Image (cartoon, rainbow, N blue to C red; front, top):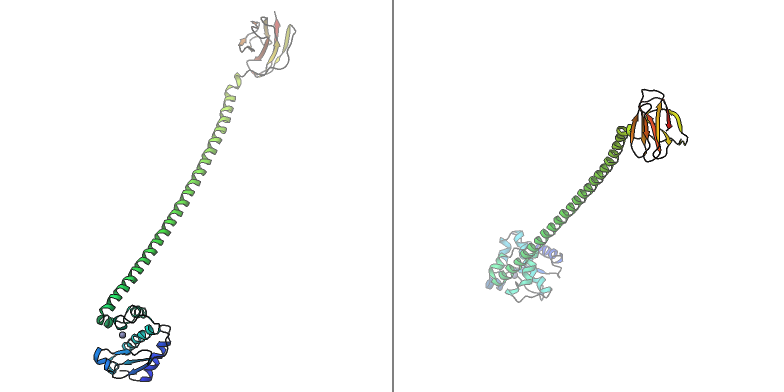
Length: 291
Ligand SMILES: [Zn+2]
């Protein structure tokens, strides 16, 4: 279909100068050759002695442009193998270097593989290598992804654990704080409550008016204020109040307490300090006489 010699040569020139080949110029010829009769081939590389590739004329007639370019490339692979001094001894130049280059260029080499069983074996081996390389690359990729996922999972778990631990610490601090607050506040409440409940029964603090005279006279101004009288052990004393019907309360500082009406005689048993206070709020005159 394409018989224009100039177009053909320009195509070959572009190919030889392209990064795919990078070889010296190759002359392309379309002519009959005895080789085509022997081998039934459609083209051949004549070698660097002539630097020529030969295309069978009827192939030129029948081939599409794309098929023709594949033919040119096929012969240029032979030229490339030869130029690079690679092995040409196998399967009439269709050995491993040829097959690898053809695969690299994406050339259709079905007919070559059909013609040369050894080429096919080489091709199958190379394909196996490529497949196993691809498989191992894929496996490595998957492994790397898994490792990444595991790391991410681990990172997540670490963050989660740290977060939970921080929560625990926070809760613990809160609990401890609450407990301390409860104990302190509760204690204060109990103390306060006890103070209120038991306050009336607490003996009033003695006023510092000890008397050594035979008689002490004064006022008991309210329920919680007392008067003290220093007595000797075993001394008897009489209490007289200004209100005859009022009871006067007292306590000896051995802890014994008493209620005494007017004129009651009492005996200081152990210690000699008498404390007095009135039963009801108000001011009472109290006289204590030693007997
Ligand atoms: Zn060939």
